[in-house]
Length: 385
Image 1 (cartoon, rainbow, N blue to C red):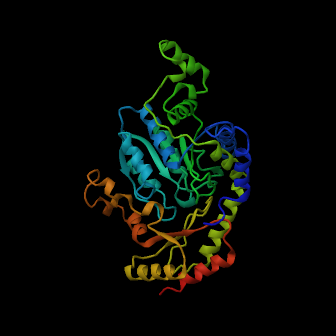
Image 2 (image 1 turned 120 degrees about the vertical axis):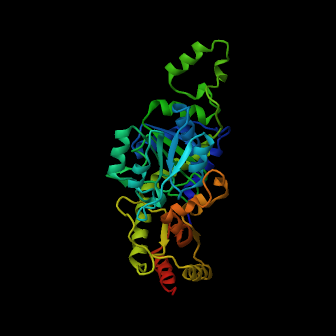
Image 3 (image 1 turned 30 degrees about the vertical axis):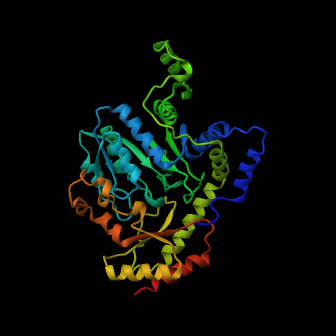
């Protein structure tokens, strides 16, 4: 990653800090960023938090308010830990579905097969800029009244059927971590068209405090029911403090202006990479329609342990930074935190994810990457025998 935070972003923060008494906590710039982001994405409401993981956490807290009895949430084994841990932390049962190798997201047909009368939501990760949705899945979830939650932390600007990912489901989550399509250093966003979700997210973000709600009718209802409480300190929910700051808001507003360009450049870079990659060794048939690439995807066509060792040795020697296992370090079902929650050896039932775990990598992609650098990376990868 290079130049993801630019001089103009830092200068805007410095100008704010030059004031005699600058507001640093959640304030006007945060609210402006939320509004501008909502306009860009095409949703009614957005709530800025301190990370994508916190967006996952609050989303599951909101789902728990709707379904206090719990139930099942369908999740991918190829994702970041917070998608799975947030489900567990709120008393839901994760139901895992293997991935589609072309999108790296959960296989839509297998999701439909996994739906039951206990299914409360499908928590779908759009992996590394690929569109993980199908029209059939969207239609089936609507027909069965199952909520769709989109994790778009790695896929800002990707689309499905001309609509931006994150504007299709009940709730969507974004991350603004340093290496993502845009950055607030650390940060995340919860997005929705549901006004009740919006108010709940605002309060859950800040200790569950009623005063964080901007719905006057809701506020008056709580005040009428709790006349003995100080109106400034009414706590509606057991909640968290995951607020972001004015510095994050300022950076987000500056970075958002470049996001469409960044998406375009990242996508151009991916096409150049895949067009030169040796398709006899590596997969190149990814779902590119509507994609907004986060990282170059390097996946062996066939399992080959000896080749993987040679490949990693070559990348290390050549200074090519990579992550083995792709998103989240590979198959989450192999991780210690799920021991005792899923059966021993359960990961064996997810061969597509397990292939990525051992034979899949990603390599950094960013707008500042030069064509000749991409060409050199491809030459290095293709030279491995």
